[in-house]
Image (cartoon, rainbow, N blue to C red; front, side, top):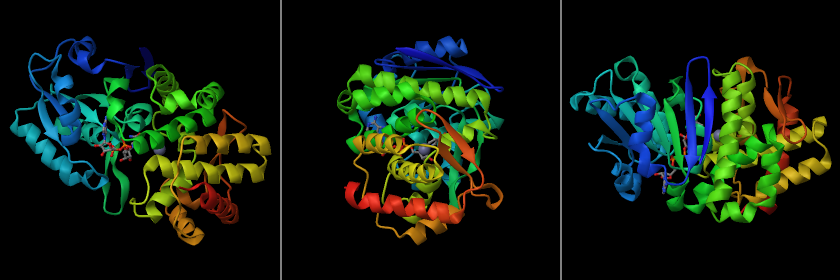
Length: 366
Ligand SMILES: NC(=O)c1ccc[n+]([C@@H]2O[C@H](COP(=O)([O-])OP(=O)(O)OC[C@H]3O[C@@H](n4cnc5c(N)ncnc54)[C@H](O)[C@@H]3O)[C@@H](O)[C@H]2O)c1
Ligand SMILES: [Zn+2]
């Protein structure tokens, strides 16, 4: 069991990770909020509830009111949020109510958004069930939903009161989801934690076989990295941007394939390859560092083959909402374990990087 403290200007809370947390949720939450309110909600999805609902309920004297969000990005909408908010009103939720978001990143983002808006904001706790949600989306307080025009265009920052990441629930996670989530840990190592990179190089077998101790080490280090960045920059005005390493091209790939061809982490895996190519050309990493970093990305693959043209990916990078005022902002590694933001990347540099990625996808994509 490991506890990581997150401190931002707006909140202080603990992220706990380890095995067996799910069966002890109620007392652990009570330790944070003193006593459970009259109305506790759990937002989850039907399959997660079928797999883990019984264990979730084990520690509660009175069962929380369950709110269901069907799986899939297409349900991360204002319409779903409205339906869930109305269910909460009808179930006599009030300003003192607590919401527990129990699921992957989608449930976490929608759950946090609903908590941030219900009666102008109620307490919420994250109980993430995917690897990605455990190492990334449940920490940091970004909550929101999609619009038909694009992903995550509506939302807010609201930090949870606590995060409980139980490694046991990862036991039912499909392999593909685990591998994709691990890309965010690879990213965490590359941008801010050399020792995590080394650990992931030396223990890939244990990690991929879901050895609980190895997973705990990777999850805790990834959360620690994110917590440290968010502590310095809660609202992404500076340092927090480094978390977008691999994401400019990653988001472009997701958009260019209409969010259907690959998982977010897989797109980020390829996006990191492109960013490494750009960094290599600028000389912020050496050839042997690049080789080592690419090898680690593929070790946690397989990444999917890419059926997009460079032109399509380029067009999609232009619309990346993270490019403020048309400036081609890019996060580049500075060696292994450090990263920085550059603002003057040219279209030609991005194009060369994208082309490198597409060439590599021909041999490394599965
Ligand atoms: N808020 C943030 O800072 C942040 C950061 C990164 C990503 N995100 C968001 O997270 C979302 C992606 O999250 P995700 O990758 O967790 O996907 P997800 O929430 O769609 O979950 C993936 C799939 O795994 C299933 N699942 C979840 N837990 C399971 C378990 N324990 N066993 C078996 N199946 C399980 C889900 O039902 C779903 O089908 C995106 O919407 C993205 O925008 C947010
Ligand atoms: Zn990401």
